[in-house]
Image 1 (cartoon, rainbow, N blue to C red):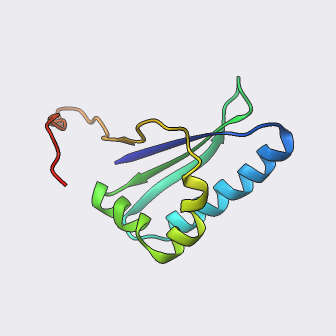
Image 2: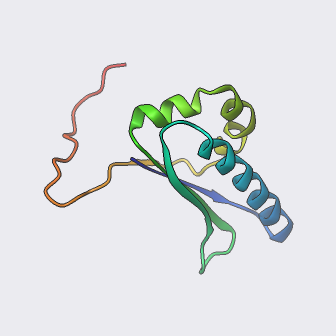
Length: 106
């Protein structure tokens, strides 16, 4: 499962602060079980646009990571500032059966 969270910083000082916060959040997420990989990045054309992308073994692993105390305390405050858009993606592999859209019951 791929998670893509995008953020917008307002100016250079805010961008440096955002970079530090995203790197710290990434470190906390990387320490969680089920984490496969990830990156912090900045858009080439719009330098105030940043991304935190992470790869997980499963959606459950990602959800468990978000519910851990360290992530709630140290990463969720910055993650809550992500742009309001869908962030969870399934990886498309050759011949893979893709998720079937259907109503989810919670």
